[in-house]
Length: 265
Ligand SMILES: C[S@@+](CC[C@H](N)C(=O)[O-])C[C@H]1O[C@@H](n2cnc3c(N)ncnc32)[C@H](O)[C@@H]1O
Image (cartoon, rainbow, N blue to C red; front, side, top):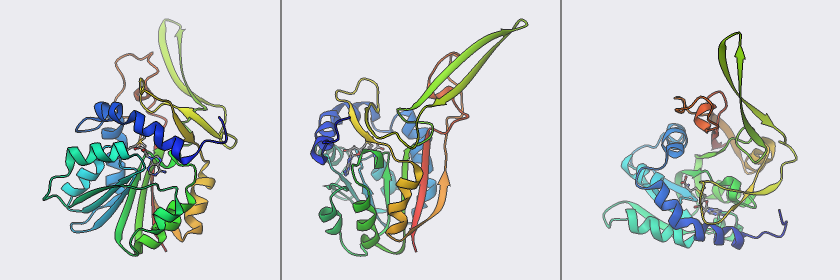
């Protein structure tokens, strides 16, 4: 991929994809969101009634709405003005304790402008790999969260759900018994740099993705004063209709999502 990709390129792609994304996520989210992302994030976040929660990269606002249902007061943010507008239209009723705002989490100035000690918890679903830089996010959160505050993230699993993880299905007739084997070929992990990818098949524009090995993902968090104190690796439980299908659902052995909880020391 072209190294000169900028924050505004990332934003433009998401502005262009927002309507499509909204149509596919709908009111409840697609199966990936409903079965893998949201339950893991919710479990790690352990929202308590009355807590102030900051959401980074909220997209069309589904998880923000869920946190309000759980009793939180939510500031939901996203770099894409179109996403924010759609989320606001969908969910912000005047009485709900939820505000939607445009915010670029890769921009140190914008992260630094968040209120100091303003939030008990923060969450970012499926977006750290969209960001060119993640150090500004962790540094900003270290200031914006209360002491001991927590940050929960979900990402495509950096080992099994990247541009370099190739899903394979093989079938053999073993003495009259037809056997199907699903496996994964991982061609790159450490050296897999920025790339282009699609989140949902058919989306208008291919998105930029910034794969990070776990050490590169977590080092800036540790440097900003966080410790990792929760980790989940959700995978689909029930199989797809066809055993020969390459659908992710058939690869239950391999977690497609990594969810982590970081806490300020
Ligand atoms: C894959 S979507 C996920 C949206 C939502 N969290 C969900 O789970 O459905 C990625 C989101 O990250 C947002 N995003 C990308 N870069 C960002 C940045 N630097 N700061 C804030 N949001 C960003 C995009 O606009 C997009 O809404």
